[in-house]
Amino acid sequence: MNRRIIIWASAALIVVALLAFMNPGLLGLRPQITAGAAVLLDMESGEIWMENHADKPMPPASVSKLMIELLVLEQISSGELSWNEQIPVSKYASGMGGITLSLKPGDSCSVRELFEGISVYSANDAAVALAEYMAGTEQAFVQLMNEKAYNLGLSSDTVFMNATGLSAKDLGLGLDEESAEPAAETRMTARDMAKLAAVLITEYPEVLQTSSRTQMHLKGKGLYVSNTNLMLPAMGGAYAYDGADGLKTGYDSLTGYNIVGTAERDGRRLIAVVLGADSYKNRFEATAKLFDYGFNRGLRSGERVKSIVQALSSFMVSDEASYR
Image (cartoon, rainbow, N blue to C red; front, top):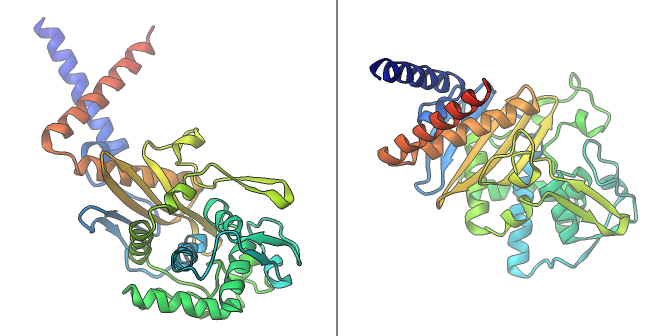
């Protein structure tokens, strides 16, 4: 009997060591994140629970479109915009590269369709079409974005230069990486991204109803596109994370793979920012590690022990089954 206890105790210690190595967040330990920058924000306290190069300005790619979402929802709330308003697509907007809804000059889409195209699919033509409609020109809209960033108290290291967040090279605008001026590209910090996401969710929680959708439908074209956030539980697959319901992914050749993710469990909501991951796989895995760390840190000591025991039990069951 004692020998059996020793064997199981030894096995448990080995499992704990493996968990600490493979995913320390499950044990409430600070995880190692391999990316250019990372931040974990606890919405309940407003505190940053973990940061890695949080104040380093980086090309944000499509995650900067969160600012468009905020400005659209503000104008919807104030009555300046309505969801059913039809927006004409200009030749310039239709010429955007990267991810698009394949909009053509003269096409007409509703505000809601373009908003969903941005939130669900990160469509660059939808972003520019909205920007032109709301401010007259993309550059005039960019000024609104920077003014809003200032009013929100974001740092001076965050500067918007276009509506999409992507480099001129990735938008296919005729500039390569060598000739493009660094100052001409949008820059944001991970800390500022987390703050922006927190404001968006706090003031307009309905945004999560859109960001958690698995697909959007562009009726005029009969087009269905899938959400780029593979962490949504309804998406299934290897990266689905229980409680995830947003918020924005992005890719740029200057940065790599980015995400501003959010998840809620038992009334606690977290925001995780990962910038400059070297693959879409590492982007989602790093975000999951941040969430695991945050949710386990938020547990009381007794609940944390229970969580560890459940992880151990799950491992033991799967290990035992593998020998059958």
